[in-house]
Amino acid sequence: MSASSPILSRILKKIDDLPTLPTVLQQVLEITSQEDTGAADIIGVIDADQSLTANLLRVANSPVFGVPNRIQSAKQAVVLLGFNEVRSIALSATVFSMFEAAEGETVFNREAFWRHSYLVAHLTRELFTKFPDADNKALYFTAGLLHDIGIVVMDQFFRPEFKDIVETIQQENEMPLRAEGRFMGVNHAAIGAVLLRRWQLPKLLVKVVETHHNPWDAPAAAAPLVRALYYGNLLAQLIGYPAYAQSEAPTVEGFLDSADAQQLAEAGMPLDKQWLADTVTRYKEDEILLDLIMGAATPM
Image (cartoon, rainbow, N blue to C red; front, side, top):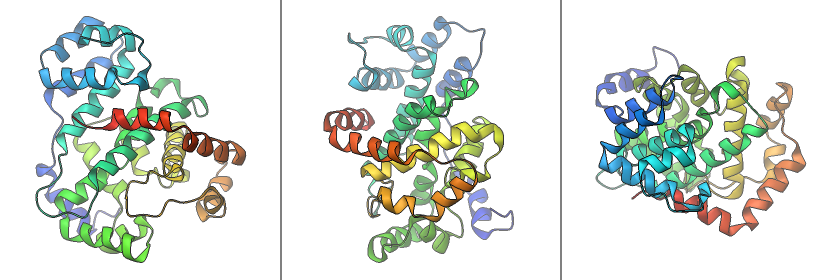
C-alpha cells in the first residue's frame, strides 16, 4: 500500500479513533512473551478483570480444548492449558468484545465473520505440525484470529464504501479482494496491518497478516506461519465458512486451477492435493467437530 494512497491517508487520520488493546490484555501479552515469568504473574492480572476472566473460562471450557474437568478459575486455566493457550483465549475474548456490531444499517454478517475467524485460528494452529516454527508457535492461533480484522475496520470506519463492497460481492459474484480494491483502493489485509501496528503486536504477526493472501511475498522468517495461515484460511473457505457470508465458497478443483495455486507452486509452497481434499471432506462430514469449534467462537 503506497504511502500516497488516499485511502491510507484516511486510515492514518482515523488511527486515533481505532481501538487500543485494553491494559489488562497488554499485560497478559507481555507476561506470556517473557521467559522469566511464572503462572502467578499472569493469574494476578487476569483475576483483576472480571470480564476477561468470565470470557476466558467460557472459551476454556468449550470442548475444543478437550479439558476433562470443568475449569473454574484463571489459576486452573493457566495450569491446565498453559501460557500459549491462555494468551490466545484472552486475545480472542477481548477482540470479540472490542468490536461490537456498528450502529445503523449494515449488510455485513458479523456473526459469520467471527465464525470464519475462529475456524481459521483453529486450523492455523493445527497446521503448525505441517509448517512448524517453534519460536513463534504462540502466534499461530493469534494470526488466524486476526487475519481479517481489517474487514471489521472497513465496516466501522468506511461504511459507504464497505456497503458497496458487500453488495458487489453478493450481486455480481465479485471476488472479495477485487471488490475491496475497486471501492477502497486497498484490501483488508493492508488495513488490518495498520491496526495491528497500532496495537504494537509483534512485527512478524503484522507482516503475516499483511501478506496472508500473497504468502510468496512474505519474508523468509515469516514463511512457516504465513503458509499455515494461508492454508488455514483456504480450508475454512473450502469447508464453507468464508469471511464474507455473501461470497461463494470455492471448491478444491477451482483452487487447484487458480493463479494462486500456480504462484504457490512456483514459490515452493504447494500443499499435497490429496491432503487438501481429504481435510475438507473430513471437516465437512464431522458436524460435531465443526459445532464445537463454532460454539467456542460465539461471543458472550
